[in-house]
Length: 255
Image (cartoon, rainbow, N blue to C red; front, side, top):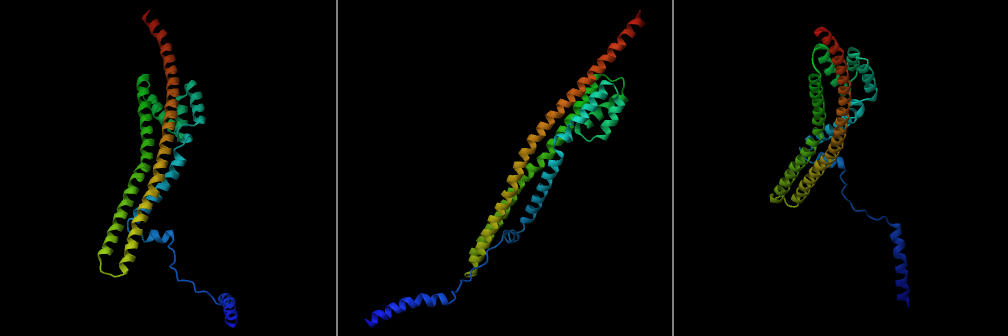
């Protein structure tokens, strides 16, 4: 019986001693932050970071410039409509010089040619407008292509960094460094994966924004073509009225 009571007392006292003593915490290694992983991912991260900064800047610039107010504005179209009906070409030319819309540049080129060549026919004026409109549309499309270039270059740079990391890992496996080679192996694999993730993280948003701005640019080009057609239709009416006014004079001269 004494042995039985001693065993019960030992079982009760063991948890009490365990609560009073401080447990030993294992010395675990600190987890790396994302910034530490990027800094140790090799030299390829430098162009990747520059590409990311450049892509963000392009998105901000495109949000401010590739919009309807920068291509066709309702205020300018109302002013151009009123001045064309009054045949005030010089006034419309002055208004176009003050505005920065794409349609204003097209009208400026067209009226500049008309005022300098008063004997030009409507077909020549139409060719000037179409040429300038095509140039503005090509400029919009070419600007958006930069995002597509970043979307293709960034994953390729990430793949290059991945190859460097794998080369480093296999070099560590072949070296006679004992247990240190496993540390170098893990560092090489980490470098390869970080470069791959960084390239995809830059390339995927760039391609998404490229698709977004390409669709917006196409809609704005359609609005520009519609506005140019409206201006040319008004000019066609003015040229027709001028031709009707000249015809009776010519008939009187013949009689």
